[in-house]
Amino acid sequence: MKEYPLKGVRIQEINIIPDERGFFAEALRQDWKDFNEDEPIVQANVSYSYPNIIRAWHKHERGQIDYFIVLKGAMKICAYEEETGKMAEIIASGDKPSVVRIPGKYLHGTKTVSDLPSLTAYFVTRLYDYKNPDEIRRPWNYPGIIPTEINGRKDDPRVGKQWDWFQPPHK
Image 1: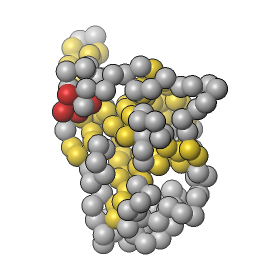
Image 2 (image 1 turned 60 degrees about the vertical axis):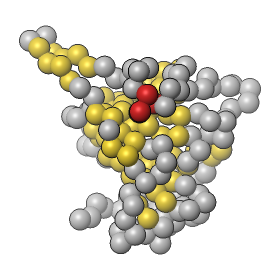
Image 3 (image 1 turned 30 degrees about the horizontal axis):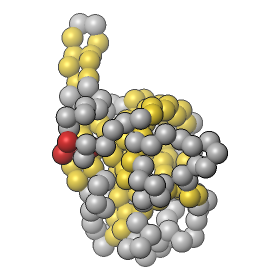
Image 4 (image 1 turned 180 degrees about the vertical axis):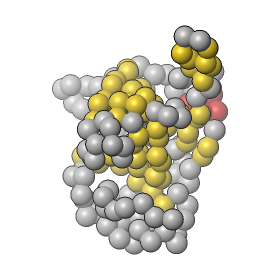
């Protein structure tokens, strides 16, 4: 399990068990208490996104936690803490499946970064309420998202600037 500087944001690699038929893997388990903090999953969803599609920003104020598993393609998943400006940036891929845990109190969003569409299964700890949705939304290019650090790094050249989903990767 890998932790990120935003409390509760973490990744759990999935153990792939291959055989002559393909593979089997456990995606989430109730007894992974260090990972899921004993929060029950109550709804499963599937999202299919074309290359370069951004689904951002939103957050949940009633305690929902999202668990993302990219099954095909690759996706950038970001979580942003408005109070501190801290950002977690995660690249998840169907080539190396893992579960990405994002507490809903953070603004979060995704961008498909592969040349092919991404297919993502995600699980949540609160049922979607059609009459009273637990979603606070911001536009994908919201000018108020200015990271003070990214994955704990303050020397990242994107720090102190409005978040740009289309900025090319750097090293």
